[in-house]
Image (cartoon, rainbow, N blue to C red; front, side, top):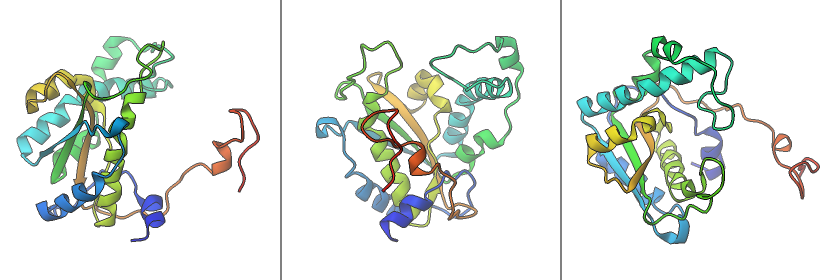
Length: 221
C-alpha cells in the first residue's frame, strides 16, 4: 500500500473479527516497525505479546478504575486526566461511575494484545526537572508503537493505543513480570477490524501549523 495512503487511513480500531493474527504476520509487522528511531538509538523498548485470554481480560480489568475517572470527568465537562487543571469531580462520583463494556472490549476480544514498555535506565528524559508532566522520554518508544500500527494497517489489520491500564502500572508489571525500571507506555490490541475506515476527520494543517512563532501566521503551502 502507498505510504501516504497508510498514513491517512490508519485509524483507531477497537472492534475486531474472529480472524487470527498469525505469528508470521506479526513477525513481519515487528520486523519493519523496529526501524523506528529512539534517543541515542538505545532501543530501550520492549514488547510483550499477550495471546492468553485470561491475561488479556485482566489487563482490561486493570484499566477500569482509570476509565471510571475518565468518564466521570468527561460527564462533568472536564478534560479527563488533565495535568494542568485539577478535577472537581468527587471521588464518590468517580467510584460510582459505570464503565461501558466497549471501554474494555478491544483488549478482551483482540486476538493479540501488545504491552509496550520502555527501559527508563536508557531513555533521555530532558524534561524531568521541568514543573510539568514529562513527555520527552516518549520519543524513545511511541514512534515504535505508531510504526506497529502503520505496519498492521499495511497488512490489513489494525489496533489502537490504549493507556487506561497505565494508571495501574505496578499491577501490570506484576502480571507480566515487567522490571521496575520499565515504564508501561501502551497497551495495544491488534486484530482484523470489523470495518476499514478510509476517511478520517482531522484538523486542516493551517489550524495547527504556524510560521516562525507559535502565534505566527498559519502555514499554507
